[in-house]
Length: 604
Image 1 (cartoon, rainbow, N blue to C red):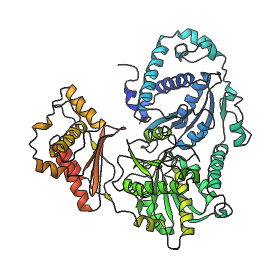
Image 2: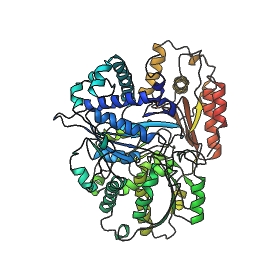
Image 3: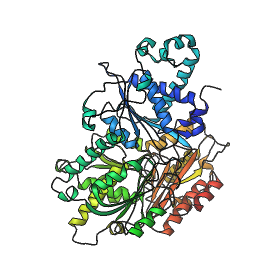
Image 4: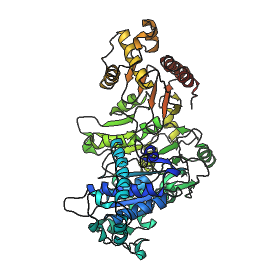
């Protein structure tokens, strides 16, 4: 069996993540040298040593893995700043202060027995191709280690790391001496601002939790001073809001209480002690019924809002003042309204409208609502890292992005272009406070604002086992795509030609002599019109999405597991059930069991 064949499953579409048992000592060591190679390849032309910030989440062993990675990077000649227990957005914030290189050992919202790693290179999250390249480098490092002369390495005093084959001479790394008394890290005595402005004098620096938090908080405070320069309410006194926060025992536990106390007059936090056992459940606020405790707490304290963060602080969910969970679709709309309301005057005078990015699982009402705000709605593949890349490539045209899973990204040059749940929550709170103070209606509150938005009856983002059909060369998504395109062509009523994504699926099937024969299905024109009524829109950028007059449905293959993900929504329960029935009918020729599972999905 090839080296680390089992670990291949850890290298997913967005990060490294999987069962704790696969994070063996040998694997972590090889991963460390692969990262060292990656960051050395990015070395500046002036040969300055690259600086990598490293942190970890609350999970058991995350700190150990982070320390091991840091030690290896140091031994390989890189400069390391150890941030300790932090959120993923805090790692990104600190990486931005230097060269944009950072690693955090985290499995985000996953269960407690799962470990993971996220990273940045030159301010960029890795693509799925980059992640697979890193896996190949991990294998390469292991092969090198086995081939090196162990006696030579023992004499050098370095571990068996295979440094000769990373493109650098071992003699370069022999100059790096990590003394035993320095391995616990250097405690900087300067203020956070000075830490950022001054170069690192040692090979390794460990910042105190107070230093790491203070500079992050200062940067956020500065954002709101610039947003509300004449609003003494925000700084001389605190926002007159009662806020309840569920940290879910994750990495926000040590930062959210002090940060929200800085801005809000009444703050109640719970599950706010870091605990890798996650005693109240997975740190995933989007799980069905996961916010029951927060909802009850909002009601009990008559709070204005409830806020929930996931395990590494990049996902946000909200409960309104009557204890109802705000759907991510509605929250995305509200946050888009926040950024469009608070845009600089110079930006509002641009001829082209600002763009708002949303993923393919968001509701059918969202594009219309965004148009009403004066924005151009842009649908995207699912994946916050994909959205960040699209935003960074848009030259500022995309000002905000969000997805159903609770990732929200601001791109108005005020803060990091990253899905920081704490920052997004604070933007919403300040907007709510300003909206309340400027309203002629003193009863304005979050529940009333949501009540004015279109009603949505929807299922959650539901996971279904991925069907395996040995009788065809096509996946279920490819078969479903071909069927929908065929039905549209069959109807022949102003049916648009296939999109590029649809055409690629069709041409791929034809090139591979696909055995699934759509044209052999006994479908009449009347049946085709019933399944895809005139005016139905088909999108195939990420799975199959169908937008009907009164709702939508989407079926796609998950990027992070061997499952399909499905979501359906309608203007009423009847519309929702009709859309589920249509999708079931479309899937039934290929998989009866999948069709039955689609019909059985219950609304939220």
